[in-house]
Amino acid sequence: MADEIGSLLNETITLQATPSSIVRWLGGEGIAIMEGTFNGATMTLQIRSSVDGAFVSMGSDAELVADGVVAFVASHGTDLRIEASVADPTGVDVSILVV
Image (cartoon, rainbow, N blue to C red; front, side, top):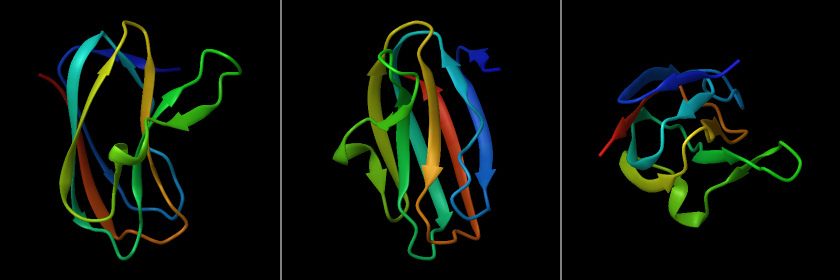
């Protein structure tokens, strides 16, 4: 089950192709900060589809291969997560914050 947050999720992604915890977004503008050792991984901010419930990328601007920030806007109750590609990041810290 997703946890509703209004301000912050801090998590370290360390396992191959393992998504982060699911965040139930309270709505509005936010940023996802990702920094650490990517080891060739692509880290992608994903949103749960209202059509079939699957997670999908928020677009090519939501994918990072090195330290960076992704800005986004999502409605109240939207489920978000970060997913690593098949490469093996050894420690990418992820923070999702309200702007």
